[in-house]
Length: 276
Length: 335
Ligand SMILES: Nc1ncnc2c1ncn2[C@@H]1O[C@H](COP(=O)(O)OP(=O)(O)OP(=O)(O)O)[C@@H](O)[C@H]1O
Ligand SMILES: [Mg+2]
Image 1 (cartoon, chains in turn cyan, orange):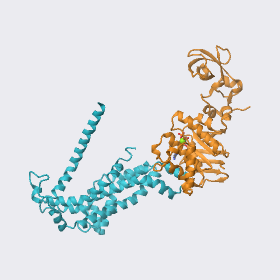
Image 2: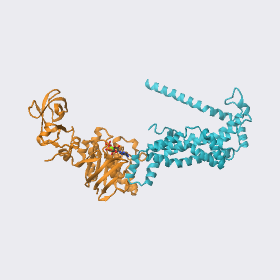
Image 3: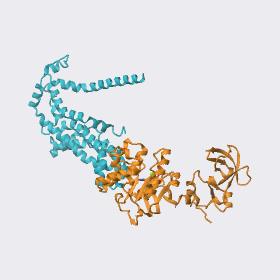
Image 4: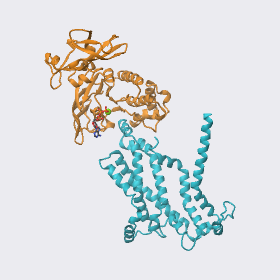
């Protein structure tokens, strides 16, 4: 009796979860479908769900009009570069705050977080002017730099919480076992820190990939990543739903694939510390 | 060899002095227990010896060599942590063998030693498990295995049994003592449990507020406590302290009598009269908590069963040879 009730409850919540998941995913699915329609069908009311004339024409047009690979490459360089640099700075920073904290460590952490509370548009004008003066507008270096700065607080916070979770006793045990600092790092710390590092890297990669405010405002063509590529299809020339959808699908595809294959890491990363 | 000497060892964290000048001589092969109330500096003193904290002042000698500037990895000591501190990503085999691997031993020699240690600790069936797949007692054994396999100059234990349940604690207590005697390795063991201290130690260091109150064998501490603190800390139930007339008559500010050295007399005239507030009958012992009027509450212990109950009048007669006398500043008066 009890068993049956549980089975039913599991079934109900499974269905509910799938429904929720589908609802959340629906806009993306719709966009993907639209990218295979003709412009007319994309507009049509009532819309057709699956039974329309499938075409790759939009993708061809999009590729012909703007160079997808150029923007994708920019996205990879900007997201990858800013993530790597952020990690390089954040690892030692989080490290020292986690393992030899001082009285001010909490304040420093809060101050870092507080920089994320200000809307970026608040500093758009000064940043734009600085970039213009030093010639960083529409340059990959400039974007790497600004995205790196923007995400640094989050990266440090994430790494800090991971490192904090590593019990000091274990490091001291390794020291008592005769491990030098180098070997402690290789045999004990790194294996324990790798899951945290990996999920921080992934999350930051996704954040940087999707970042649209600074990339839209500070780049136009040369350094423009995929966000700018999408935006160029929602132009005042008129509405091109199908082409916009095709561009968007192309832009999110790489990160969607990455997210799909690393979902275990990501979930673990985001719930780390909450469940022990 | 594992002879450890502390000379004027001090430790301050910022402005706070935690260890206020410790002098200690630990003979090779002896089992020394640091005991004291929470926060008295036991762990800090142990970590100073381990090298996990730097001394503020003083010298620590291991086999005659000053090691204050030597990192923990080079001191040749091994430590068992209260939290076990096992490497979560390594198997039991990896955990026990880690120290040997760091020492650069050959693989088959490591395996041989690890398996021997595991056999001593009944860990053989678990060698390929991860720490998270073990019970608390088994983890504790792995931590001990990791310590013994390196054949260190001394073992340092920081409350290693405090996370175990009572029955397992008694069993492990005996095992640790037996193992230490069998290996003949110096051991320093931190606990706040004075029963553990009395049963395991060759010598006990009683710490209080960062100072060593007394250093001696369990029986020395029991029979000749150096001061009020040690007298009150060692022994269970606690020693009775009496001030006022009975003390003054004996030329002391305070006198102390252990519960087992109070003779219990029904309606006796001599001694200290009082009314039983609580009587505990354990079968093997009888504990009486007696309200002795101006002398306060006194505890008396009788070996065996005594049919006395709450409200009964009794008289407690101290054994004159077993009265401890203390002066104004709490130090024992010896005559
Ligand atoms: N890193 C530190 N910084 C500042 N104070 C410290 C530090 N480590 C310990 N202390 C202080 O030193 C005192 C002694 O601590 P210690 O851990 O040695 O006590 P303990 O005798 O082991 O106590 P317990 O039985 O509770 O484990 C405590 O008052 C503690 O607050
Ligand atoms: Mg302690």
